[in-house]
Image 1 (tube, one colour):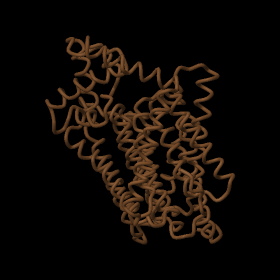
Image 2 (image 1 turned 180 degrees about the vertical axis):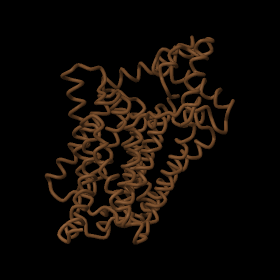
Image 3 (image 1 turned 90 degrees about the vertical axis):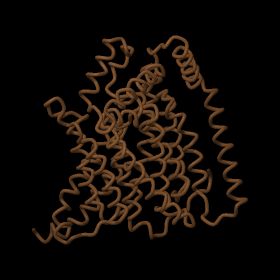
Image 4 (image 1 turned 90 degrees about the horizontal axis):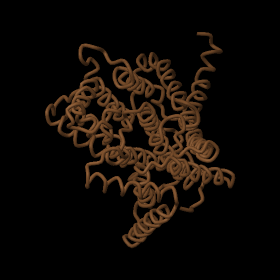
Length: 432
């Protein structure tokens, strides 16, 4: 290699890693498949770094290795039933997904030394949340759409916008140095929250108070007195209740809540399934019965859809269930399609990163103005958010749900290993 190119490559690599960390959240909802740009850059950088990592036997940081194991386990679960009915499933519900999970492991090679800087990740979250708010405003007010859906669907859009808002909140609480950054950060929090509101995604609204509690409870000194912890807990609970009450009086939220109550009443009285909640209840009932017939390996995507159609034909399930390719619950969907083995893979996919973040939160509680603390808290919000969203939606049935979970967790884990963790960080405003 040309010596000049060899000398410039590390600098180019660092710049490319920073660009990827910025673009992944910044473009996630702003443009169609915007999350793919940063993810693709990371995968390419991992491919470039792979020969050197193998040749020099570069050690993997423990946390990054654990995350790679979780991704590999989940990738193996997705690989089940890729050959279904004698045919290879190539689309996003089959081999395509397994390939993307493999690329996520490859991308980790580019981050063996951690992130060179974390400010791009912070600004990426802020820009991504602002972008979600702008898209929601355009679709809600100008286009007159009933629910903002960005370039995906309303539920996915609202849930990801909500996470962008919470990530932005964590950054602005602890990692801003100027009033300009503080203003941009709070604008991002409000814009992302508006994106969630305009989407009408009730599943995200149910999870939001829990995420508020987590931020306020976990963002506390390690050796705080019991009375201080009690006060912070009461403050968190009070704020969570206040948020719920305030949201209940917002007309769009009120309309969606009333509609939900009516859906439940209609299901209970007449089994009405042609509604948002009714079709979910019908999906869960059907999926549970099917899963018990083949509990170890499940039915696979193709057979699941075929048997669901058969149930509709026999009038054992309402016609509405045939219009969806998933069961509207992450765990139920995994159980019916990939059995207990798939559920175990999903458990690891959530439990391993949550354990990594939790340990770092305990270690960094005495230094809350560190990148380590912020990244760990954002990571906890990511995992818990997806766990909550997955109760009423299959986030992993959609490409954006998979890619955002895969690569944002990769960036949070890489930030924990970043050299920037040990550097002095700007003092933040202490406002909640």
